[in-house]
Length: 337
Ligand SMILES: *Cc1c(COP(=O)(O)O)cnc(C)c1O
Image 1 (cartoon, protein in one colour):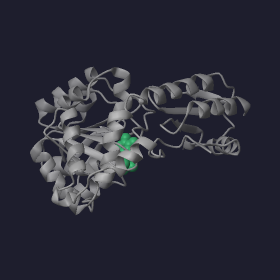
Image 2: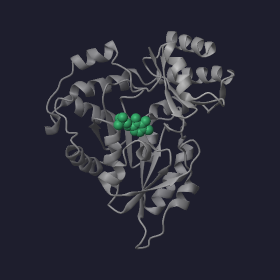
Image 3: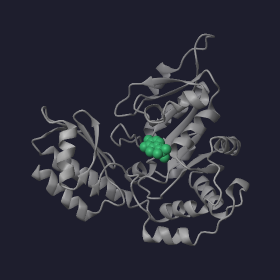
Image 4: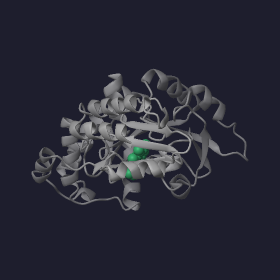
């Protein structure tokens, strides 16, 4: 089966497995795992920040960031498509006791003008707007990405108004291989950054939260209370280091393959429209009379798994384990249906 459901389905490459086998480990709760320490230092340095924290998931890094940046009765401002709102089981309310102020953006992206209009005045009966969260690339937005030029006015506004700015950078490197921007420049625009190693980068487990030293100190306590204090996590961190050293540049291929599939889909009579393809996520709408479920069944009997993104909307995600040969197969199947 060819799997286009998500870029989380990848398995470690032989080189990655070898790096994991060779990892030097210790008890990370005592901060004695040299490989976890090395990963955290590497990522902090890469983003020009003081410190970083290795966590089991991107949901945890986002949830910890919200918790550190806010107090109960505050609110978080973000796009309505944001992962923190859509896919983290209302954790912002559960873990942090905060509200959420949603902006209707464009493909998951919001502007400084929209944020300025969303910030609430300070009255006793209103939540305090405390944190803005951007997502890059935007998952539900179809893999759209921000450039730093677009982010800068939002950063300036947050600074001026005293709001914190967090980046959910689950697929940040899928954007950076397109824009050519450097992680360090990104780091300079945000108070904190969450980065997933378990998506297109191909590590089996883990995300990193990046920020100032005092921020990460608090984050470390919260990771423990959420049950995310791991012991010989160096075996996993070794995979993450390997991913950062060897599997960043190739994200270009994933983006390129998604674009090529998008071009083919555009010419097919059962496709109503293809959303703009900016990275490795491809979302398209089917013509009237064809449901996503029916279409996915047709794909499945021909050896391709994908997921519905609405009653007549389908999502494909390209990744490390989706090869050129599979690509040819998928294109043939799409033309056959
Ligand atoms: C995958 C993802 C996360 C984190 O997900 P986990 O499965 O908890 O690691 C966060 N934000 C976005 C945009 C994502 O796509």
